[in-house]
Image (cartoon, rainbow, N blue to C red):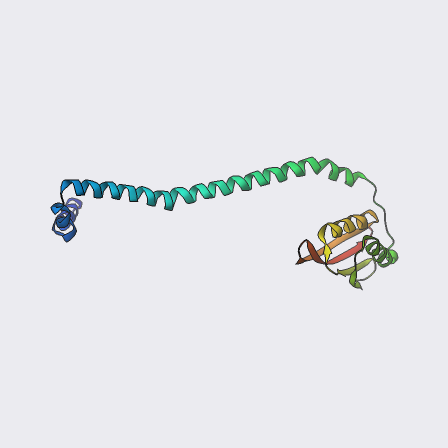
Length: 173
C-alpha cells in the first residue's frame, strides 16, 4: 500500500469513528473550548514532564559545578603548602622504636588503642576505638612529623563525626 493510500485509509477510519462523529455533533463553541482545554493540558504536560525536570537537573548540575569550583580553589590555595612540605627534611625513626612512639603519641592525642599488632620489622597494625575524625587527622599528622607513614587506612563511621580506624603504619622512608 502506498503512503498516500495509508494516509487516506487512516483519515477514512477517523471520520467513521464514534469519537469523530461525536466531535462533529458538538457546537462550534464547545469544539473551540475543547481545543483550548486540550492545548492547555498539552502545555501543562510538557511543563511537568519535560521542562521542570530539565530545570531541576540543570540547577543540580550548577550546584555541583559551584561546589567543585570551590574545592578546586581551596586545593589551589593549599598547593604551595603541600609542595613546601615535600621540600622539608623528614625525620627518620628507627623501626625498633615504632611501637613505643605510636603508643605514646596516641596517649598524648587522647586516643585509645584497641589493638596493636606487629607486622614485621618497622610496621604495625593499629585499631582505634571510635574517635573524632579531626582528632584522628591531627594524630596522623603528628605521626608523619615523627617519621612514621600511613601505608593503609580503613575508616568506618561509628557515630556522628566519629570513626573507627584501622591503620597500617611503617617507620622510616
